Amino acid sequence: MQIRHRAPFVRGSTLLVNRSGGTADMLMDFGPLLLAPGEEITDFAEEDERAFLLVRGGARLSWPGGTMDVTRGSLFDESPWTLLVPRKAKVVIKAGPSGAEFYRMATENASDYKARLFTPAECGSEFRGAGTMQETSTRIVRTVFNDSNMPQSKLVVGEVIGIPGKWSSYPPHHHPQPEIYHYRFLPERGFGLTAIGDRPYMLHNRDTILIREGEDHPQVTAPGYAMWYLWVIRHLDGDRYGNPTFTEAHEWVSEPDAPIWSPRIK
Image 1: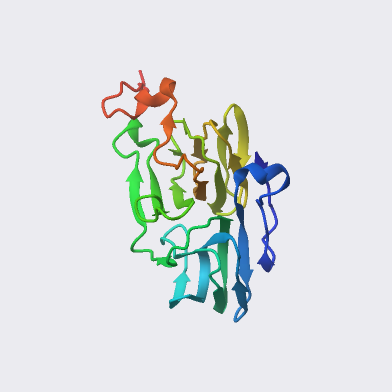
Image 2: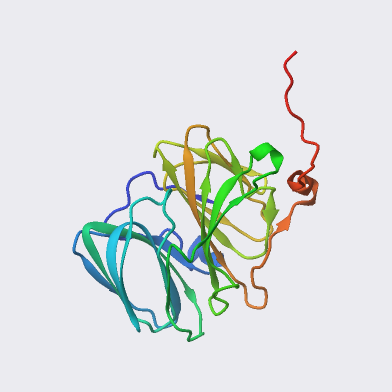
């Protein structure tokens, strides 16, 4: 499923995915939060844990047990600051002089863990796909938190930078847990392509893709454009996300010595 949003997001909160109607099976809320310079908001939820990932700008974050000033100039060149808080935790966000933009993610979670701010330095970042497939699937993967560093959460959050002309989420893979992909491009007029199961979609700036149980989701970035996407997975009760299942027909391409055809000019 594709959710298109061509116009810039407006000030305040925009709910792109919610736990009602046609997106109820995603089991989480998701959307941008834009604050004007100096604006302050308070966020509280009785039953939901929430994650706030900084996209751009600067802000002072306050939560039970901590306060921190955070800034981010480029989501393509810099890893994110991400605040994760449990239910009943009050969060205060005050934007800096240039304003601030976050993505807010929420899901029901009865665990009363300690709130945590994940720094850019803590964010796992790797060149995935390097050394295989003639580098056609090399991309930057940043994992903010998962079961390895936040097993109390029901969310998994990360980012991918798709390098111009290259594939990501490849080889094709799937998993039973619902997942959200949300895209930004550099330059903004850029585009990419994905196939969710057997359904193709053209991707543009601010588009959102919803991935459901068992759907493969490979994608490719158009030459000349960089593609950033935020990925959010919701653990299922009794079936937490670990590693995806690669589609057997295409798994062979990731082997270091895979006999991949290359063109020859006669």
